[in-house]
Amino acid sequence: MKKFIRVIVYVFLTIILVFTAYAFISGRTYLFEAVWYNFADIDDYKKFSNNTVTTGEPQPWALSAHYNKNPLPGQLKKMLEELETVAVLAIKNDSILYEFYWEGYGDSSLSGSFSMAKSITSLLIGAALKEGKIRSLEEPVGNYIPEFRTGEKAKVRIIDLLTMSSGSSWEESYANPFSVTTEIYYGHNAYKTATGVSIIHPPGSVHSYKSGDTQLLALILNKATGKSLSAYAAEKLWQPLGAEHAALWSTDQVGGIEKAYCCFNSNARDFARLGQLMLDSGRWKGNEIIPMDYYLRSIKPCMIPDTEGKPCNYYGYQWWIMPSRPEIFYARGILGQYVIVIPSKKTVLVRLGKKRSEQRIDNAPAEVDALIRWATTFF
Image (tube, rainbow, N blue to C red; front, side, top):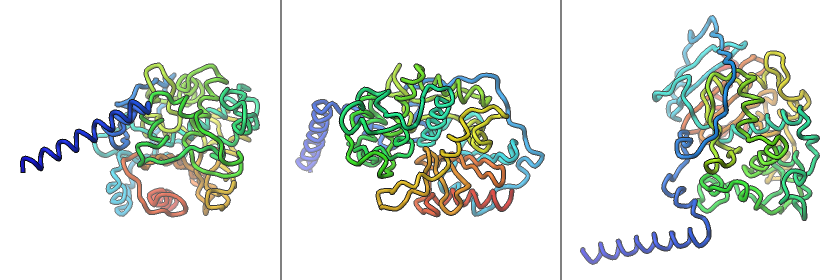
């Protein structure tokens, strides 16, 4: 028995030694953090350095006359609880109609957005267009990022990044600790990781979901505006929209750049402002935040053939669209973070949580369909 234990200890120590040597020799020291933390979580902002997205004059939501008078239907509540939901919020006619929280979360609790941050980055591209900081979506990315000025990279345009059709070699893999997605999440040089791709398909020819495309949009914004993503988000979104609480945008290191594709942290009430902005066609209380034509193109399916050769009828400019109900669009995060906009009901839904369903309905996790049916039936 003692010999067996010694063998096990020897094998274990050998694995650690080989892993450590590989991480240092390859320069992939982020692997230590990836292995230690293991899986992404809605509280990951506590693990990372963050930049603050500051607020201005708060504009608290009004409460509907019917606030919380109709509880969640039993089956929907059961589904949401099985998926470890921490917040559900419904805005109708500019007022809070319903909200409920679990697990000690409340209306000011921070929660990670994951890929909902992609939709926020898209809004900032729209704001930069309105300002003239970005002249056109047809501009080559190389106008802003030196690494994209030669070769096949020089053919990539801003619009190709918005529609996830850059044609880059980025591998969107969350389970593989050696993937570029894991590297940019736990690593400390997002610029190098995002620009280190090669182009394997003609830009604009294949829609393929890539977080790296969004990170490149952030680099463009930084160059075009001369501001950090957090500062620009504060100026163009958080302050004009009257957010009640400062948000945190996680960075690759202290004083580094924001992880634009994943890591905007806020609460349900303030996330809902982004949906209300889009419900009101890119305007907030009559003030234009993004141009109307950009808003319309953002929520129109790009129809670029996807990796299965089918026209992409479910994605616009970093916003998801319901194929069978194309008037409904939403921001989406990997653990079931959603801001859902239902124009016909003048409704915005927010769901934050720790899991999402593996079942797909209309190209969306099942709880998205369930939430939409709740709103369209009872609101």
